[in-house]
Length: 130
Image (cartoon, rainbow, N blue to C red):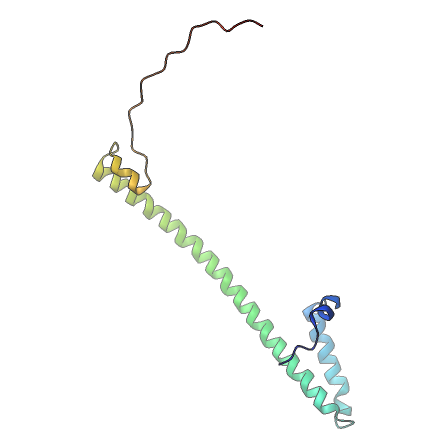
């Protein structure tokens, strides 16, 4: 199916709300119905009716997908929260298995408790005056 407008023509077209397009096309189809058999108007009315029907189908599909996306996002949050709790439990058990000081905890992205190094002595030299 060939696009009715080039990219340049489409960019120049003003944005029209979808509801306005539905109202405009439906009104045009009703008003022109009485002249359907004149000058092959029926061919163009059939094209417009097909476009109107397909646009309504696509609009319904988009709304359905939007609802599915919202449900999926909500469920993802719930699963993420449950997974976070499970990860905490697993890390807790691994810490119990290996001990809180074990260097093996590093492979599980956990920091083992380490001894501090020797403290550095502060220098007691007086700072030079300017």
